[in-house]
Length: 539
Image 1 (cartoon, rainbow, N blue to C red):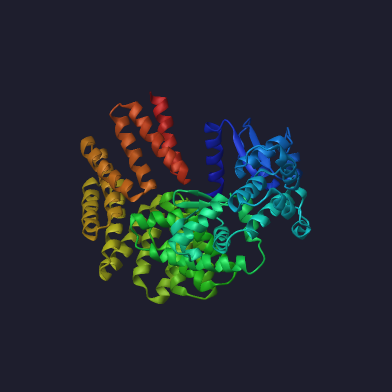
Image 2 (cartoon, helix red, strand yellow):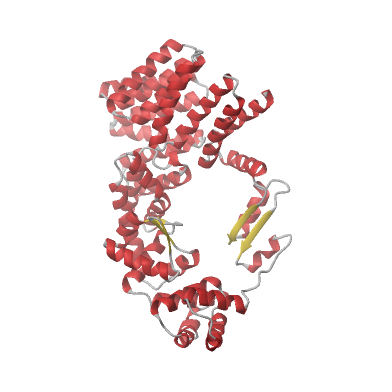
């Protein structure tokens, strides 16, 4: 979706559905100003939370939040430390709260440490007040000093494996990371990983939910700024783990696609860090591996991440240089950009890829570029140009025996025939494509041809046949986790319901399709919205 269209779509979504918006933990005034200038519908109330006092000028009604009062701070500390209420402890707990500026996270962390280590309140007060900790924090503000002292004390008391795991977790940077990838990054056996993770969770330094682990932002920031060499070692370990994890899930099955998508944030960050350190081979390997798994990211809405990963790989391929890899990444990145509606940029990348592939004599790659350029021409309403490009692609694919390529191009030629009103030719081409996809075991290809055959049947006035084909297509797409494809078929089922006079069912299907497409950030959400608008006018 082009940048301007994204702004319009988000603004419309907020206007329709958001009674209130919260920008939590804002760090930069530019974020709030850009939102106000480009996205905020008139009258939409916005609550901004921030730790930066200088951002208060942005608010119509700034509200200064007080620190926890002493009684609340003491209750929080005792609860997390599992201490009974004893008058003899009151002075020590009050001093701990003062030293930590009554910061809730700081209190929770040191209380959890006290409970885990069975230390004394007196020893904790002495440690927190130690000038070696407090004076070593440079220009930290008083509130920053409190949390950083708490985290430093907690970190220093960790067993070696837990300290090691904290650094590896912080290197991931994403909001959470799955245990399989974390185990690779930490290089710990399952028992050691479980024990170290248990320690971090018990001391309020990490959260575990199922097979995923996350860090509080302040804990992650602290761990990433530990003295060298811990962060550098953690970055290197993460990059090696990300490459191994990607290779382990490169089989292009629905399960592998789901596992790659689950760790998309971390995989992309690892590739970008490799580029920043000019580790070109590692960045290229990671980008090529992930993007070679068809639609692993974009079918689940990770389009922006897929583009970032592609650009990281392109930077590495150009730096090495590696022409074959460059051509492949140009092609794969262009596909994602095309799906976002950026046709001009996609065309430029496809043309660059085709020129490189022709120079290398890679005819299979040339055919794939011609196919995608045909798709762009088709989307632009240029059927003659699209047919010429598809015919060129098909000739190469038949000559090479590239059956998957042949099937994909036949499918697109079927759409052209259908658009031209030649239903018989469209059906022949779709059926030929489906037979090839079935022979290859390509379920995604089978699903898209079933979908198109459903449209043909619907246009021919065969609603029962259309529903059967759509239902078959939908079942496969759901099984594959192809959310974009699911939405497309739901929309067509909505058309069937509308044609049958069942407005309530049509609305339900259109709304479900729209919700999926909005979640994916797809420009096709506007099509579902237009169907809903038409339904409202006509009923």
